[in-house]
Image (cartoon, rainbow over all chains, first blue to last red; front, side, top):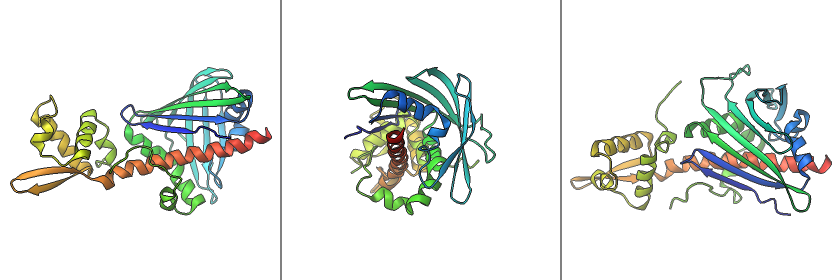
Length: 174
Length: 103
């Protein structure tokens, strides 16, 4: 079954649009996104794991978790919830953290709006828009949230990127 | 923090993105580039300078004229990071699929 994955960067608008369909009812997908013990099971690319330190799912509340590597190295991720429509949508502001998990409030931020809707066949469509304050933030996000994790899990990122499944999503430079 | 120019500064400005789009078609002289914009030559030349500092464009002397051309390898750097970010989400969603099966 197709999951209709869309990942569409719009660098002019400093936005990335993400769409994905899941073969589960919206209530379950919502739970998987809003119950920390469930989020921990999918948010970190294996073999990295996720450990939640603070979870307060309310407007103004925060979510602080660490991606933990196989050698115990930690990458903290901080999000502040700015809007919640129970069962269907939430928005958050992301900030970079220092090594102790303190958010760097003066640093670049990202904003995410995520919504969940029911589609036919008792399935769920997820739509998420990530807006970056600066184009450079996208790079930092990738570097802090992903680079170490994947080089650990995939051996060689360049190899991964060169593989046929990696489509060039942004420019088609001749 | 080290704030040396990188490729992301090249694309952070709409005029610079427009210049890059022009140069994607062919190498151009600063005058020819400026001819495409309503802003002053100095303003355009400042943008070209930033693009050169970011490594987004290279200079090429042809006779008495300087031509600017797109540095494709540098532009691919952005593509590279974007592809990595895309991959991260693909992996997460696949892991989420697995979780939903048992939920």
